[in-house]
Amino acid sequence: MVKIRYSVLFGFSSIQIIHDKIVHFITFGILTIEFYFIFDTQYKSLKLIRYLTFTICTIGGGIISEIIQHFVNQKRIFDPIDIVCNVLGSLLGLILSVLYQNYRKGIAKKERLRYHKLMNNNPESLEENAILNEDTNEVELGSDGRSTPSDYVNIQMKDV
Image (cartoon, rainbow, N blue to C red):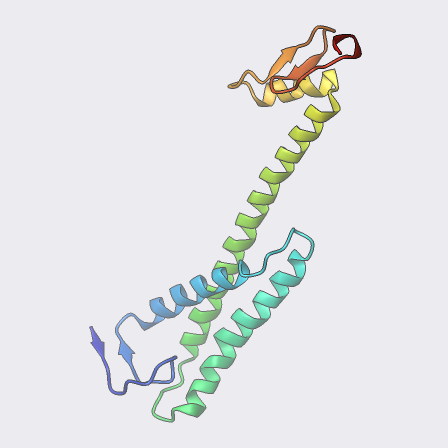
């Protein structure tokens, strides 16, 4: 149930919501996740993105915005529990973002390793790749007895 006194937006109003703390927690979690993935990086400056997200979303958004709201709208009651919910939601959003990015980074690393092994055409590395891809039949034996990927075209000088 929402009781609206004024129709001012952006958190400077005197809106009272029954589950206000849950709204703070979820909102700051979502905003932090969105902010973290705004930047298009190739895993080169992830530490900088983490610090920037922590500084802007957690400290700036979670703490400083609550203090500023109290000064902008004097009818608004300052509640330190709102700050705690903002910070916890923002930290959870940041942790989930970092875990997801590390998961995606691990998958990309496995794909690069798999591609590198296929392109080097090392018999022992291709055996490892065959173990990784048990479900597919991507590795075949060529005419020289070496393993080659199934989409690899083996053209030799005698064929020309």
